Structures are given as C-alpha cells and as structure tokens.
Image 1 (cartoon, rainbow, N blue to C red):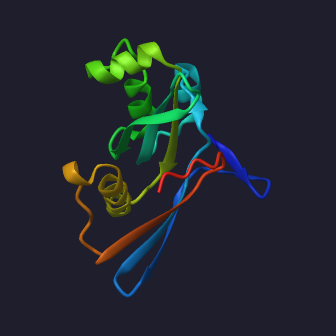
Image 2 (image 1 turned 90 degrees about the vertical axis):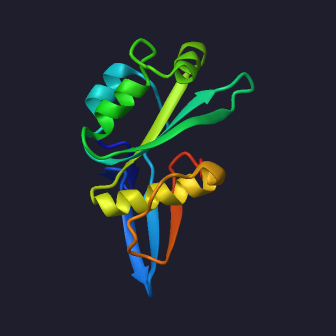
Length: 156
C-alpha cells in the first residue's frame, strides 16, 4: 500500500494540518507518480478517501494533468481504477486521452471529509478559478496547501 518512503520507513501519502487564527495550513504528501496499470491500482492504491490527479505523457515527454478529483465513498482504489480504464470510462474526452497516451496518477489519502473538501477547494480555485464549483468546509477564513512530492512535481 505504500507508495514512497520518508526517512527509510514506508508511508501512505497523507496530509497534515496546522490551524492558526482561522487559517488552515495543510501539508500534502503525494504518492509517487505511477503509470496506470489496472492490476497495480487494485493491489497498491488504498481503498480510502482522498484526492488524486490523472496525467498523460504528451509527445514532448511532458506530464500533462487532465483530471483532478476527490473521493469519499468508494475510495481512491475504485475511483482511480474506473477513471483510468478506457473501456469503462464514460467521458469521451478522457477516454480519448486514455486510448492515445501513456497515463499516470498520483494520490493522497485524506481521511477527514472536511479536510478533503478544504484541500480540494484550494486546488480547484488555483487550477480552474472561473469554473470553481468546489466548496470548502466553512471552518477557516483562509486555506493554504504546501505540496511534498517525491517526484518533484509541485503544481502550485
């Protein structure tokens, strides 16, 4: 179930939070970037709540994010597995990407639903501010996220 090691010990990619005067500071530890393989997803991705991103490798060998999501009920394993299989993917644009390119994913387990909402809200506001329909928990005036990625793919 572990995707990376910190100081030699296995860890599930997860999030920590510090709250100071109405502001939440999250530290998000991503999994490694993993090439899509349905058997690996089934055996390695935890069936827990969390946030995830899907990428494809373009012609210039650059990773391009094409989807970011969160999942509470059903868990990361089920959601990532479903969204990375071109046979069962219902969205035509995502299916075309899955069929044309090598695809990758990364994830972070977030076990508290309010924290999941806050972190997703933060990313949705940065990636797609004009279409941001994500809602935060309402607990904090400001939300900040610092990404830690073993592959050095920091997006904010």
